[in-house]
Image 1 (cartoon, rainbow, N blue to C red):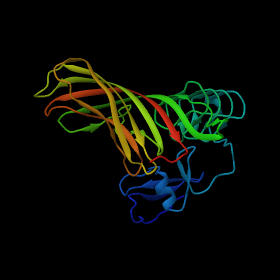
Image 2: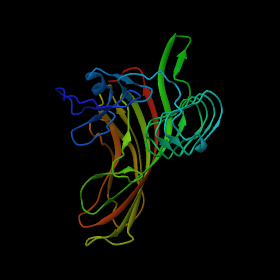
Image 3: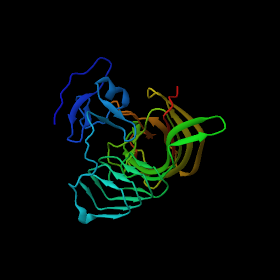
Image 4: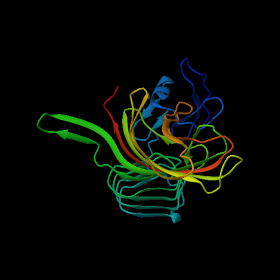
Length: 296
């Protein structure tokens, strides 16, 4: 169904569509299908679902949908929820959820969740892991609530380790954010109140250009962390940066804020010289903690 709403003061996105399952998508006037963050969701009077990252107009009471191709879904376990339009997927374990419109998903373990519209992803083990990015490979971090019985303190959080492959090409000296699988639009979505440690290996290969030399390359490792506070402000700290190998120059590589349309995200930002054609590839491992306690 369609929900057209004017932009509220201070908001760069507005509701655009509401699915039959109650999920609200947003538009910035140019890009449609944006998920929106908690602030934008609640500003328009909807409910933000922290467990999935969706903005909801309502919750469908039907727990399990049958509008998918059962012939292409293999399930070994009980109490799994497989929503509509899920194909070519495998589940081994119990109480897992595939949220819908997913292809080529593999799940091993219990109480994992794959977000809607993400394809070609795997949860390799653990419990209570999540897939929140295209082509993500994740390991779940265990139970959400951890208690200190001595001091009667309980903290709730989501935790996981995941790996993503990013790539892009550059032909001039424009600073460019790499995208997941080189699709040109998917960055690494992040959530407020989180700490993300990252370990990046980046390869730059020169392919030509009037100022380039085909076959020159550089290989670099960057390690650091980013804190995303309760309102989405990001603080990056680089703890380690090392040029492992090169022929020619290194180029420039950093982890950067790539937030688009009000959806917070990070990406590897790369840059080299003008009139040089480069192919960039990055393997990114993330160690992620998302707290239900607000952080400044």
